[in-house]
Length: 91
Image 1 (cartoon, rainbow, N blue to C red):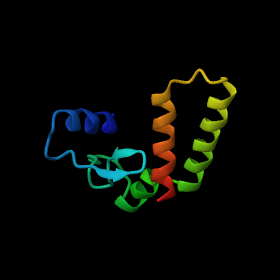
Image 2 (image 1 turned 30 degrees about the horizontal axis):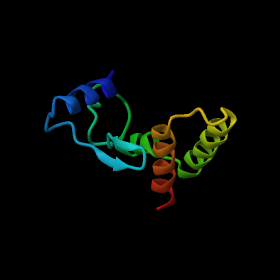
Image 3 (image 1 turned 45 degrees about the horizontal axis):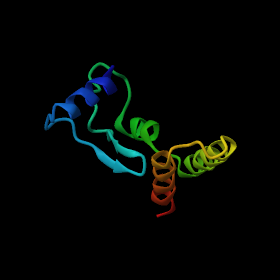
Image 4 (image 1 turned 135 degrees about the horizontal axis):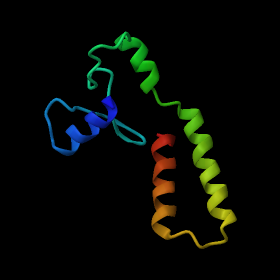
């Protein structure tokens, strides 16, 4: 629910709903989520929110194989989005 609140706040341009830019888009940082009542520190939360670049690279490669298996029927926009995602992880 806390992530959903963050998403809604972001959509409503709430100044409290900051975000960090990542290769997969804008994500909440450890200091952007309301942790009231939770027994979790910011360091643990940072680990939970971390992006595993190697796993994402594997996922992107799997997308490419899947798109290829469809025999050329994948819309160009989806192909373009996958290529751009791969480039962001190559940086």
